[in-house]
Image 1 (tube, rainbow, N blue to C red):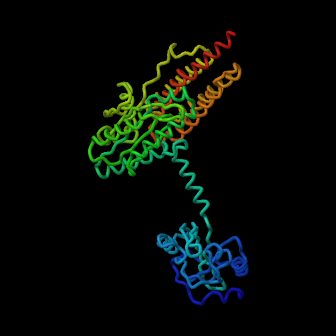
Image 2: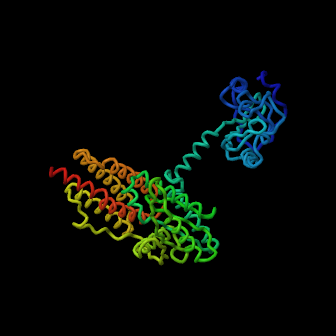
Image 3: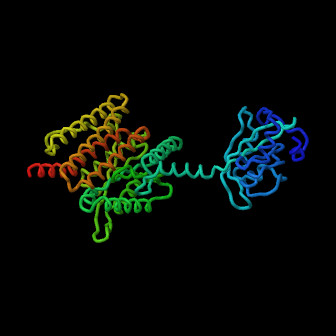
Length: 446
């Protein structure tokens, strides 16, 4: 390896802090070091760089064959301890770490560094392989953001809220502190969708989300759980009553008019409030307690907040849906499928109540919902239904929500998932499906 021998200083490297030496072919190593435009490689004695190739120089925004630098000099100070630990790894595998590195004097990039001991003409040297992984990190960060973000409102979603709530439970167990969970549901949102369209409904949701977010502390968490339901986590409480003060403030914000351009709309909201550990001590029970309190508030006249009450394990499972002739819309095919959906939902609730695996039952509900929506859309085409576009959009959104619920069910209260499915089925039947059935009946008569 006479072509590179003058580039490396003589002497023995300190042993024991790198992997066992890997003997490499000298000519291939020299060729790789000198000529590679793709692989950023450097040779070092311990952590001192002796030789670098062109790709290495380009990556770090420098020039020259070798520098009187430590590898750590290329790394931002906050990451040097991490890189130093990788250099000292003795687990028999090539040490690999990711750190923010300098490109030139001021720019930075995310670098993945891999260190391997090689033998060149009998001399032990450290090979430093470096890869720019900035784009990969940005993509992963974006995927993480999408995974935990509601695309319509830019608030957190169910998965994010579940994570924050689990952390709050663990922290509260350590500190014996209390915290609050608030579930908020808009009272008259359906009238906005029905009267002004889904675009107007989306605008209302974004405006409400922005108001709620602006009214909370930086330490609080807010998420859109789906549809017109939001969740708020107050991780610290000075007094129990602070949770209700916050709930009242959110209610006031929700009842303020929202401009749709030519017209203002009022929606209002109801809120259920649960306190750890007063009402529940697990994620599942806290969500179920707040959810039950939310519906107490709605039964009391809406536009108000209600405290939760302690729940037993059986209280977290929704009651079966009672289906009767009053729910029929008058089209046999649609009514039969609605009855089947109710049966599948009740099977899911029974699985929860009996403590048996419920995943298959949940998948069956989602599959059959898609089948039912396809049936309705076929009938819309057959009878040239004027409201088909809006109805199909409702199906699309419901299926997206169902898929999200399926993915998030292991992380959040499955009981709440069942309750949510029951609610959307009843709303869908009594609203859009009844309108569709009336149009089909009218077209059949003519």
